[in-house]
Length: 159
Image (cartoon, rainbow, N blue to C red; front, side, top):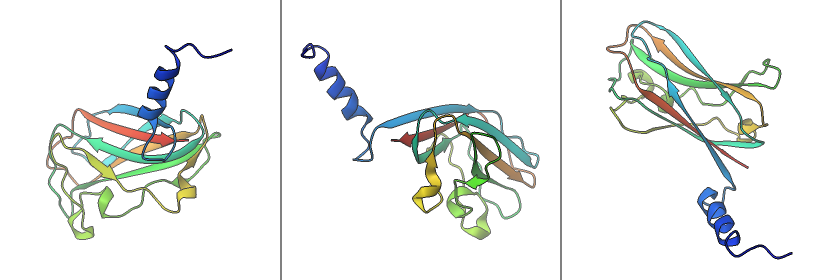
């Protein structure tokens, strides 16, 4: 049975929208972050993977800026706990792209700007299964100059 004309173009349009430069179908998950306090500590946000595939990218944004500093800084990291909660796979690299620490080359957080985080390599580390639990962490060290409020994080998964 042929597909009605009204459905075929819509499906093609949806597939084109979901394509990510040849990377396959894309599923975006966006979460709001709680306030990141000035005191040292870790804020962890749980993410449930929507479907089998790969983590393609992670981006964060905050309303406030935070200057880069050697002793008072934030670092972003992620762990894939897997299906049973016992996994320990680090999905972000512990390098300057993922911190505001000056001595490692970290950059400040600009107010209302998008910041792309650097994923770990090789790409097999980014392989995920539907239902995996990922912990996205914002780790504060020292006493931050200010809180970070109204934050959001965007996860892009591809098939």
